[in-house]
Length: 327
Image 1 (cartoon, rainbow, N blue to C red):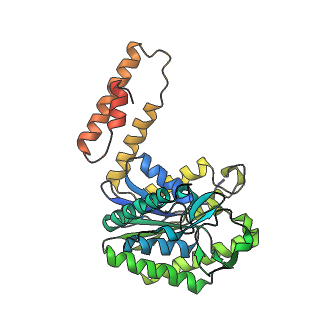
Image 2 (image 1 turned 90 degrees about the vertical axis):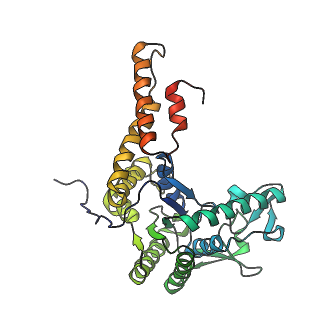
Image 3 (image 1 turned 45 degrees about the vertical axis):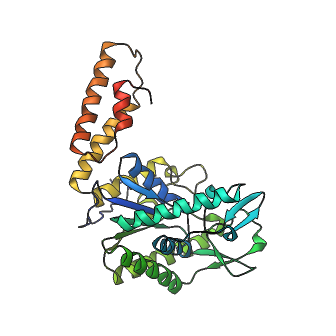
């Protein structure tokens, strides 16, 4: 008897390997997956604008990384004693205007440099809804808890979603012809929009992405949304808010991603690194015991062997830990 819906994802012919740069952009779910890659020593950059949700904001950000746009003081606005950018997450907001601009532009430059050399761009779309300022018609990526009366909310038409994303793909692949793109749809429910409205929103994203993939080379789809919604499909795989996928669900999606998209060498190294990182969390009863010292020596040797075979991977923290050196 099966207790889970069988879903065999066709392995990708193009594989992700260590040594390649991976750029993550999009919703909070892309950060969940990106954090796994970062922890396992892949060369990643995540969300230089902070978390973004809708296709217009994500596409606009990608184009501006290509252009290496530098923001100015007049691009910020003051709200609740903090300076904000309508195109950036509140992690960039602050009380000192010059510091906010400096942090934003440093991140913009990092995004520009990284995406130029990246092998993979992983885009996670969260919602088809977007917000536009009533005062000047500008679309915003983040409302920064400003009053709802500031904005017009719209469900972006399917044709516009396709146009926005296709334009960004054209820009970034002209800038970096070797770049491959993977789309995912976030399984996080935007219930603030309404349950029916969320379903409409996700449906537009899914249809737009598949239409784009059919028309573009080196553009792929990974079914993170379907894995959570259709395969796991149980609230025990969600956090207490019943909206965000919990750790078990994220791990399941990440393992499926690795199985489908990683090279065999990368899969092997991921397994070795997981073992090494797990060993760092080992809490001995007696730190001075011969058994624990032997354990540390064994793990240190493993870390050095991995480093020797993969010199570009930074294992200094792990080597220092197993050497008994202070962090």
